[in-house]
Length: 130
Image (cartoon, rainbow, N blue to C red):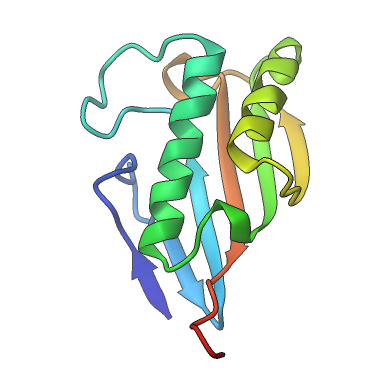
């Protein structure tokens, strides 16, 4: 088992890791759309938050030896379902033709008024020749 941490994603606010790698699978903890360089900065629009959280997800996956193209499943928690169209559009921009399994869960307000939080499961990128 390998615990993952990158400064390119928000630091955990509790007793957990950004991700855990085990048996060729990456389990990514809940990621909120905070700027890792400026955690107290304003969150911005839902679109900006979706872009930021997907960049953080990409950074965590890269640190784990994976990438967005290796996503298997994503759970997206949204505080306002009327924002879903925006979030879905940004996902399509970041993932292109790749379509991991996904679940959308409406929730009560998130920390600091965030529009979304996500957690994910991905495969580790196979080594060349594997």
